[in-house]
Amino acid sequence: MILIPGDNLRKKDSNSYEKDSNYYSKYILLIKEDKTTRLFGYYMPEVNDIIIGKVIDVLSNGWIIDINSPYLGKLSLKEIGIDPNDLYTYGDYILCQIVRMTKNKLIDLEIKKKEKLNDGLILKVDPVRIPRLIGKNSSMLNLIKEYLKIDIIIGKNGRIYLNGNINNVSKAVDIIRFIINNSYKSGLTEKVKEILENK
Image (cartoon, helix red, strand yellow):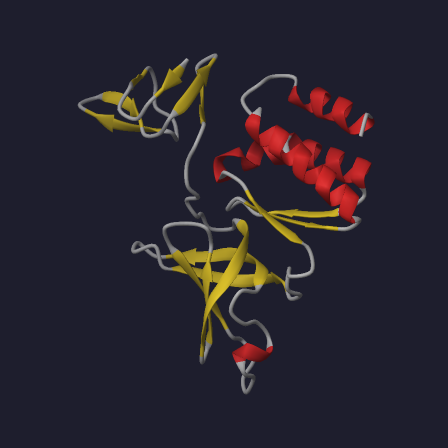
């Protein structure tokens, strides 16, 4: 069953809000066996999330980072006496972790991988589908890596970095789009394995 925002839910979960002792959907949801799954939505940052950010401004003491969210991130320069432009500049993609958030949604980041993610492809997908793309215990992600032998980094904010053989990167893009478009279906891992075996 599909619910739209404001539809009644039987019980409280992370996709609901409470009003007058009743629970209502916050998002467009799929309900299956009393479990709700968001079908669409933007990225809502949380502390410890690993994300792929894009530099959109360079300051004297760090960078402002687009994290594919309604909110912006700030990455501070740790080294003294270094021009921030010498490390990262406008348009660079970098792997970050959210370390702190204020009530006003000011988001502090720290770098997870010093090298820029500029030498591969950045693919953008709906952030709410990322858990399905990774799979339980990274099963789906590992399956793609095993068959295609490419580097894949998935940010929880809906950005994916792909690098390797260009033909295999192209195949990975097709597979990722298939997973995203069918993320609500059961038996998806076996179907993906079947597709990979025939590619």
